[in-house]
Image 1 (cartoon, rainbow, N blue to C red):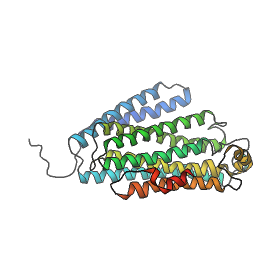
Image 2: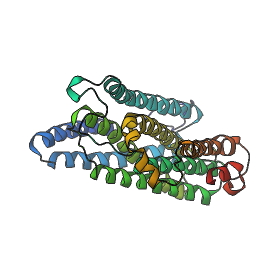
Image 3: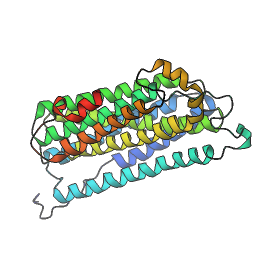
Image 4: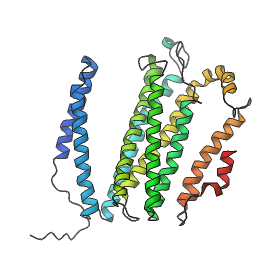
Length: 327
């Protein structure tokens, strides 16, 4: 029987992984319920173990099909791109629900929480400490992943490795700071609607950062094994799109939940912050300029340097916006 294929589509082979994934999802949900009610984590650990094994073997099959068997043709690539676009769209709507809950409760606080936001008795985080540092880390990681992308397009293997490594490192750094913030939190998820909305939104974002970091780590290993070329690297493109989505969600989280949601509290503590932060002036213009230039620098790198399509690499010290950012 001939193996010749006279069409550009990919008819996938029989695979056990979808059925096994359904069983491991049942195991994870049941393990989570058991953990909540009996404080026993045996079943959820077994679910996480089976999830890891299934993911590794399923991704192995997909890598084999796309890299070694040549089954990811141009038309298949278009379908894969539409798939990741729709997936990210569903994730956007997922986070919209958390922002909806946050603004629904914060714009008109109920009498049960003292008709105040944050509720009485809750001391929120200072947005200009760890949250601001995490914002800078994710913005920097957006630059490094774009650097890696264009290095792959330019067939520069070394700079691709460097950009991916820095992005993975920044993702791990962000996760460690988020864990430290949770450890030192003066309130819990059980502290009224504020604790619920805060930990649900930031916690699920942190989970997406972990998933994105693992996604990029797999891309780093694959790039080191020469799986990517300038015309065939959709696995990395999907990871980069997902990472930029995580960046944008964090910007909305920082502005709305950390900064705007704590606005009244920050007005009270503004003088204490001024005494600790050298670039925060009495009229707040210095800090606003700093934040604006940082974001402008990030957009400049992604739009005019990396997105220009020209065969040149990023030289930050030669760009005017870099020195404006330093200033």
